[in-house]
Image (cartoon, rainbow, N blue to C red; front, side, top):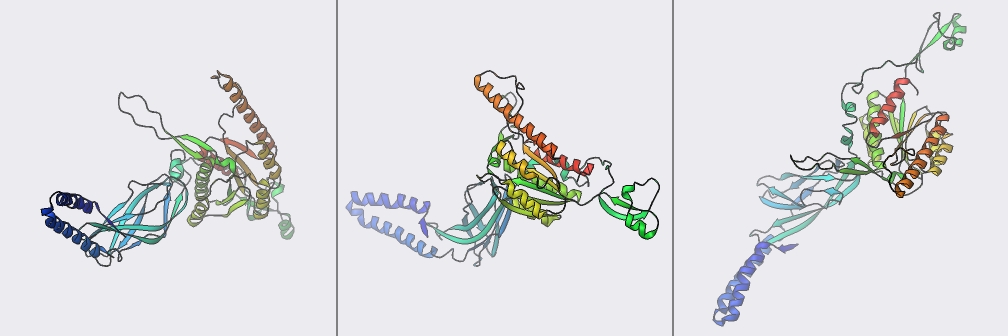
Length: 460
């Protein structure tokens, strides 16, 4: 495709229009005006012929997979192949999705002479997790005299994978990323004798009768005691609810705005994210913590059915698999099916494990269904149930700034929600299940604290 450039348009404006006007006003100058206009048209036609097919040999290559993080600047590396090794200037265009913020709409690539391959970096900042595809790249080059622009399109295959941005949690869980073995905290003495069998030894006066191995005692003719060790490798599963309630927006404070001296204070901007976004980020941080502690980490995502199940393992490749299982997860406008979820866990998880639920139970009907179906698994596994603390859910008379009738009704509604969640806590506590309301801004840190407390107390 060939289109006129601004240089050709200016040439027409400065040559064709004036001389055509002169020829119309003075018939004697018709021959000279026609000659000049004809020369310009011939030059434009010749330039178009020379420009035809000039981009046929230029090829574009993009990496098959580009990994980016949400709200962090990344780059897509473009490889331009110029077999003719001729110096030229090529304008590139990529149809990025609208979820990407770009510092510029197009990119100019200067292809040097005597170089077949040239690399160009296109910076971009994704604003949403997910999987995106780039299937075309558009080119534009100039004709030899610059009167025409030659445009072409090349088919490419580039997958853009946008992962959660874990750097947003660095202030709350900065100690997780220190290479000091135990997250930078002081080593604490672990209480208890452990559950894993280690060896048999001779009976020592004072050993408990519960630790005596009676079969070995009968065979050897003298008392033999079982020795246990503290469990070092345990299974930790994070179960993420991706149903309709996880699509609710949460607000967290953004970075403070710097103001000049003497200017009024500027309010810090706020960043909005869904509850599911916070769940995914916290789950990956908890997985990193389990990896550092030597445990096995796994995932279950569900809504009206179980979507993803990643068996608990360890290692960098497994952590990457967990991240790949979560980066395309988005809320669904369905009601969660706890019956299918608990049946799935009952059938798939035979070994005792720590199950960390990330869900929303401020709907009384969903809370009742959740409690009823937990009876299938709560005796086999250690269960921690967590949800983001709902806005306004607090006891009556806890807010002194109540002035209007609307404020009164709003406080009454918050008290009802707070009361329902408190009753749910009591019901789960009778079943040996810990229920926690976590702060939105400190969700990751509080989850890791729960996990470390379970490890320290050997509850699993």
